[in-house]
Length: 171
Ligand code: HEM
Ligand code: HEM
Image (tube, rainbow, N blue to C red):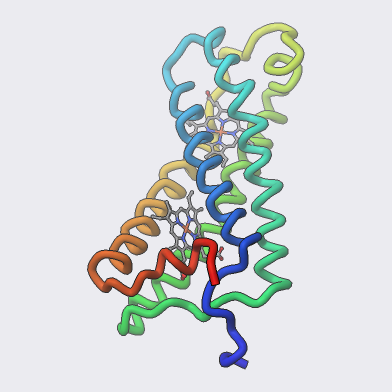
C-alpha cells in the first residue's frame, strides 16, 4: 500500500494548506489587534475577524474530508523515531487546534450575542466581554504553528531534503 502513496500533496490540498495558513495569520493579526482597545473600536476589527475565522473553520472541515478521502504522501522523516513521532503529532494537533480556535470563537460570539452588535450595528459590545477559552487556545495554536514552521525550515535548510516542494504545485 505504501508504494502507492503519492510523492507530493494534491493541488487542492496545497491550495487549502496555504489559503488556510494565510487566513489564520490574518485572523491572529485582527484578533490580537482587538486586545486592550476601547469597545467601540473593537467592533471594526471583529467585523472582519469573525467571518474570516469562520471561513477557517469551514475550510478546515473541507481539508479534514480531503485528508480522509484522498491519498497523501508518507509522513516525512528526519531519521529519528522520536522526532518523527513529534512531527506526526504536531500535524494532528494543528488540525485539532485550528478547528478549536474558530469553534471557541463561535461559542464566545454566541455567549455574548455579538452578531447583532458586530454585523447589525445594534447596541454596543458588553463590558464583561472576555476571550474565555478562545484566549487560552490562542497561544497553544501559535506555539504549534511556530514549531511547525521551524520544522519546515529545518527540513529545507539543514536537512536540505526540499520538503517544501511536497506542499507546492508540480509533478
Ligand atoms: C482561526 C480562527 C481564529 C483565530 C486564529 C482567532 C484569534 C483570536 C485572537 C488571537 C484573539 C485575541 C485573544 C485575546 O484577547 O486574548 C481573538 C479575539 C476574539 N475572537 Fe477570535 N480567532 C479566530 C476565530 C474566531 C471566530 C470564528 C470568532 C467568532 C465568530 C471569533 C471571535 C473573537 C472575539 C469576539 C474576540 C474578542 C474577545 C475579547 O475582546 O474579549 N474568533 N481571536
Ligand atoms: C497557520 C499555519 C499553518 C498550519 C495550520 C499548517 C498545517 C499543516 C498540516 C496539518 C500539515 C500536514 C499535512 C496535512 O495534513 O494537511 C502541513 C504540512 C506542511 N506545512 Fe504547514 N501549516 C501552516 C503553515 C505553514 C508554513 C508557514 C510553512 C512554511 C514555512 C508550512 C510548511 C509545511 C510543509 C512543508 C508541509 C509538508 C510536510 C510534509 O510533507 O510532511 N506550513 N501543514
